[in-house]
Amino acid sequence: MKPQNRMVAGVLALGLVMAMAITVVTKGPAWRKKAQERHQEDLLARLTPEQAIALCGNPIQDETQTTPPTPTRRLIIRNDYALAVELDFTASPSEPQNWRLAAIQDPSGEIKYQTPAAQIGVLPCLDPKLPKKADQKQQ
Image 1 (cartoon, rainbow, N blue to C red):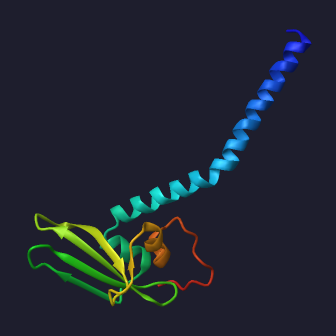
Image 2 (image 1 turned 180 degrees about the vertical axis):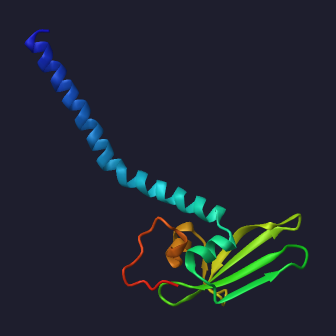
Image 3 (image 1 turned 120 degrees about the vertical axis):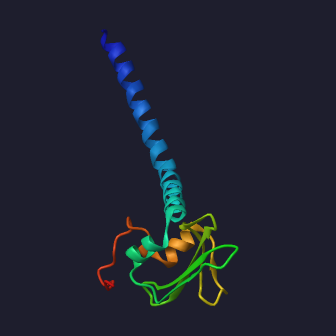
């Protein structure tokens, strides 16, 4: 291969690497945010009352109502800031053992955490991937 051809190939390869690096640097934060949103959505979609208790500790209150039409289960858990957070689960009458998260809110019902980011933000213990704080007390 001629030296001129090697030089052209090297410049083209360097240009390609630089273009890929610029793409990763500029798009990386958006890709990371999207991946985190998907992770939070998946985590909350699969969350059961037993998993919430295992991850966040014993609830202050645990109520189950099996009266028709829909079985419900209500957990009130204290978060890292000692604030009470209510997790509402529902199940279909045909499969009462399969709980699905319906809502995360303040026990008074005034504050509803509607986005996955807000729900994980108010109860970070729900996400086992998040690092634990050094001063966080174990329950």
